[in-house]
Image (tube, rainbow, N blue to C red; front, top):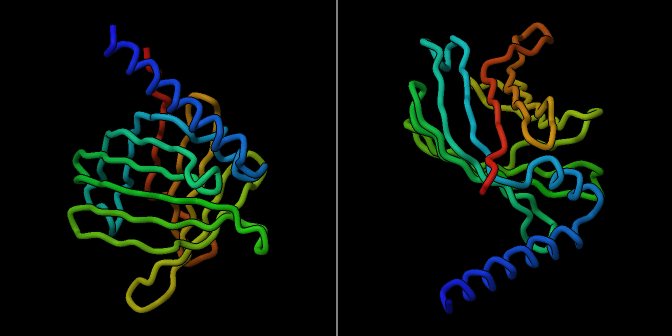
Length: 182
């Protein structure tokens, strides 16, 4: 009985903490929270390219939550498959003076790890778009990650690279489905 009571109190405190953080979130952060907070099963598909010569796939899980009293959205995940293992941390915050979202990433895969601020993000209609640049062979190349088809139970992330002709070429498509706890 005591263990059950302690578990119930811990669960209640966790719910109060999340509700408290969400109640202090700005309108901009609340929109992100509504779209992404929760636990997700993920499936990634990589197109054949110079980055994935044989294409590839990964399956995994991610968890998104509000932090710092609703001022940050934090996403953590791990996946693995023919494209190799991947672990990541993403933080997103509202930058009021810039009127856009800040975007910070840490990725670790078989090639190594990298952490940095990665461009900025914004809503374009119902899509959440992160534009950034990567240095490739000494030149800046435009990339775009776009979260599309965002619903309560699913969303898709499309990672695309500027093909050099002003058009974006999709290289990675990640589908996320909400994990429902019982």
